[in-house]
Length: 409
Image 1 (cartoon, rainbow, N blue to C red):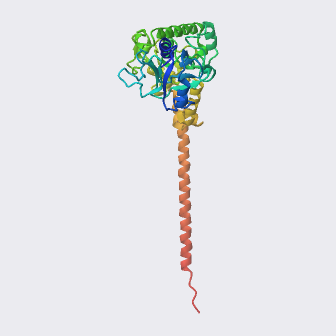
Image 2 (cartoon, one colour):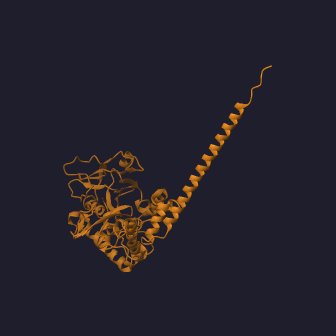
Image 3 (cartoon, helix red, strand yellow):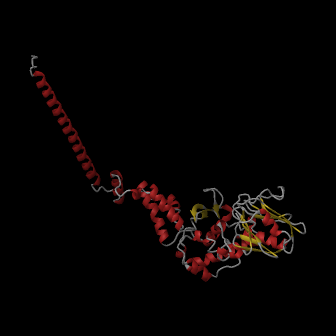
């Protein structure tokens, strides 16, 4: 989906082909989900006769500066795309307009014809994009809430390192946070972390200065290369994980090394376990989990589950809260009740003592046997009482039957 390189390619295409031209015709889709805050007719009236002065971008947002406000602003979402008729603009997986399709596309949300006959359209098949008409796009959300643009406003190495050292969330989640750095999406985050050999779930503040410097360098190199080739993925280096990140698990490899997939930052994330390993205390925790779980299941280590267990590491406060909620709903047997069943308790005792017997089973059996005896005795006593009561009643009845009846006078 469109990230900084794709949106920058669209901006440059507009800059090269549309500046200084007057808008002669406008068609705005009647789609209130995508066209936000203004009616289609008012939007059209505000653009007619205006001249395009410049094309701007911050993060994944683009806006056209006209000779007077308001300005059309585009948030690309998952499938937003700019097309200029007769001009090659980089296509990506979810773009929908082809040379032999109808024009303007049925998915067009914004269409203008310029005074020289050139036609420009913004399309969005999935309707996650947003098109707005704003007097000052940079002063209001979402653009006003964005962090520095990864291409136009890069942080220095020292600024980047200092900022990361204060963050307690996973590094993948941090890179996706547009208020931290704007323009980095899922594929760029996966790529730069792979190039920097950093695990997606590594807590940001735990990264060394060397790792931060490497990551800073990789962000710059990946974005600049993607922008250089106009976001044409066929020209991305063959060594990039990009080319295999959408393959099925078990069939995804890069440079002969297996790619695994986990959830990080709320997104499916591709990484190479052999090269991107958790470090510090996270490594110790990740290393301890599989052995503990495997010993209870199989009595030994289960190396195949190492990476699955790493995926359970919380990547943000939101995921931490979600995991807590799940455990309350019944995800953790020990968390549900303070007194586990006798059978479970004995099994855990065996595990903790490496299979040695500690007598807990015998105690439980004795208690069970005592309870059974008491129950049997109770039933026997009730039975005896019932028999005695029945005997007494029969005796009374017999005595009553033997009494002579009074003769009538």
